[in-house]
Image 1: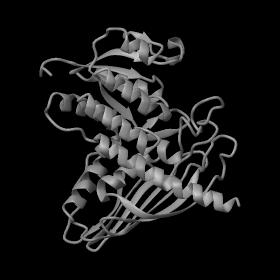
Image 2: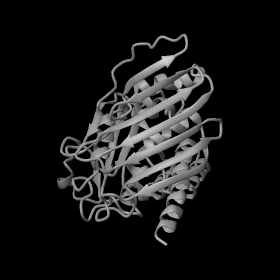
Image 3: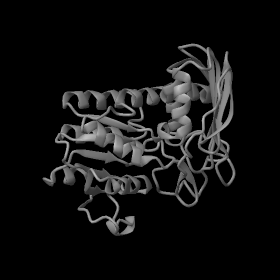
Length: 347
C-alpha cells in the first residue's frame, strides 16, 4: 500500500460505537470514510454530519463497486464473525469491535478466512491505550512486582432498563451473548494481556435484577489459576444502582502491590513497589458517554491510527486476531462453568 495514499474505511453498524468509528476516521488525515451501512433508516440514525454514501446492507455495499481497504464492524455481537468473513472474502481488512465472535469456533473461522485471503483482522480493545494500562504492562513486562501471587479484577457497572430496551438486541443470547462479552471483555483482555491464560475455573453466578430484560446472568464471582503462576478472580455485576461503581485491578506480587481503580481502570490508586518511584502519567481519556449510561475509555482514535500505521507497514496491530480469540475462549470457558453451576442450582 502506497505511503501517501489514504486508507479507505467503511463502517457497518451506525449506532453509538459505529458513529464514533466514523468520526475518528474522518478526523484522521490519512483516512477516508467511503461508506456507512446499517439496516435502520438513515434519517433515524443521526448521520447528517457524514457526507458519505449510505447502504442498507453489507452485501449492497460489497456489491457497489466502491473502493475500500477496511470495514469496521460495529454491529451486534452475534453478527461479528459472519460479517467479518464476508468482508475478508471480498478482499477487505477488518476492524472488529469486541467480541470477534461468541465462540472460539466463530473466531477460528474468522482467522482462517483472514489467512486464506491474506488480510488483517484488528480487534478493538481500546483500554490497552489508557496510560494506566500502558504503565502496568511495562511494570509486569519488567517483572518489577516479582512473582505474581494474586490478581483481582472487579467490574461493577450499572445496566438497567435505560440500557436494555424492549425489542433491541442487547440482553439477547444470540446477539448480545452475555455480560462478560458486552460489558467486561475489555478488562478480561487487559488481564490476559498482562498475565496470560487461566485454568481451574470455578464460579458462582446470579441474576439479581435482569430477569425481565436479559437471557443471562448479571453477576458472578469467578476464581482461577494463571498458567504462568499465581491465582486470580473476576468479580462482576451489572446490577449496580443508577451509575457505574468501579472497574479495578489489584495485583499482589512478591516485590510489591498495585491497585488500578476508578470507574474504568483509569486511576492508579496504590503503587507500592520495592525500590520504585511512581512516574507521573498523562491523564486518561474520559469514558464513552451514551447519555443514561457510560462505557469504557474513549480511545477509538488510537484504533484508527494503529490500523493506518499497520497497513502502511509502520507498526503491528495493537490487538491481533489471536488475542481476540483468546479473550472469547476465556469467556466461553467461564460460561461453561456458569451453565453447570446454574443447572446444578436449579435441579
